[in-house]
Amino acid sequence: MSHQHDDDDFGPNETTGYKVGQKKSLNDYQNLDADDEALRRWKESLGVASTGVSKLDDPHNVVVLQLALEVAGRPDVILDLTKSEEELKKHSFTIKEGVEYRLKVLFKVQHEVVSGLKYRQVVKRHGVKVDSSDEMIGSYAANANFTVEEAPSGMLARGHYEAKSKFIDDDKTVHKEWSWSFDIKKDW
Figure (tube, rainbow, N blue to C red):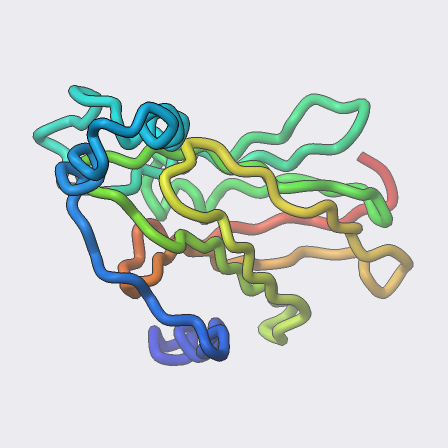
């Protein structure tokens, strides 16, 4: 499968009428209305006011650490995204058919403010696209929870699935992209 075909799977996803704001540096945000106490607290809650957290030897603005599958009453299934893409491709896990789950992501923003961070995913079975999702994470946050989804169920839904995921922002910067897989089974 060509890289172009993979990019086509994600397709364009623009919100009509939405205009990306002017890019500002972390320093610009830190100095914005410095005498406004309420704004200072708001910026601290977004992580804008913190200093000294960036690794100077790591050029990435967004460092995606893990993706977790959260199912009520069970320990989270965690995908360590600090591993190489080859290692991630080898990792597969099982999802019980029909179960409701939510994806959680752990990441950190460093160096500059990232605006409009999104998680995009395409799922295929036997090479055929069966699902795609696009979740807006937002700006500055260090953790995000996704909406609750339900795994497909029934005999025809059971099987092995391939997924391709990426984190992208309003500036079209891809911060992390990887392929992974999972199996839908009748039971865990």
